[in-house]
Image (cartoon, rainbow, N blue to C red; front, side, top):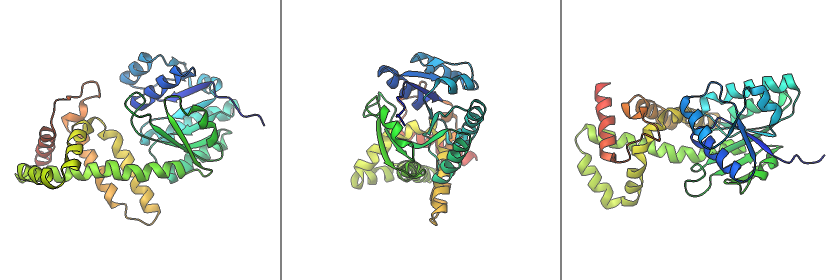
Length: 297
């Protein structure tokens, strides 16, 4: 059977990562489309700013698309797959569907079954790195029987790594990686907030700068921007927790991390967007807000 040549890619949804991926693919001469039904005004603005073509319905999108990239918050991944599956079943079209979200291998296998049973071709994928245009291209890991189709996007503003034939492998590497990166950020936030709450921020900061300066300086750059991402990260930590529990490992590290990001998401800082983020706010100022919220709660 002749291998499909990918010419049209759908991005669902063109948010922070999705719109940047769409822009990169367009710059490499691919047609990029989306359906913005039910998306936020900000997502619509991001999508239109980079020239992603809007289609009026999910059915139209499925009919015109070779490959769908699902890039949405983890909590929305299953419902989106079900909606796409409904269209696949009705139209009898065998579109490729790549779930690129931060979800557990268990969740991705369930989503894969939904797409496959509807007649679609499923790809397990995950993204590590910043959106295209912000330093090194993001790495898209892909696995499953149809993963090689993703290779056609390699070098088009993203780097694609096909790592196996089994659904769950690509999602698994994301779970393990984010368990460290975002999980350790949650730990840093917790201990720094504790130090602030008991009046030892200055002393602890001096000790870290003396004995752990590289780590401290890195986290000082990262934490002020975390509140705008916190709502999305709650679901991601829950998925990591589920992954570890399914393997017989403790789920409690990342249940705790989920609680941390849920608390941060309830602070006023979480109402900022990447565009309105106060880039002058320091680590100390950010932690002070967290500590005040903890006291009030």
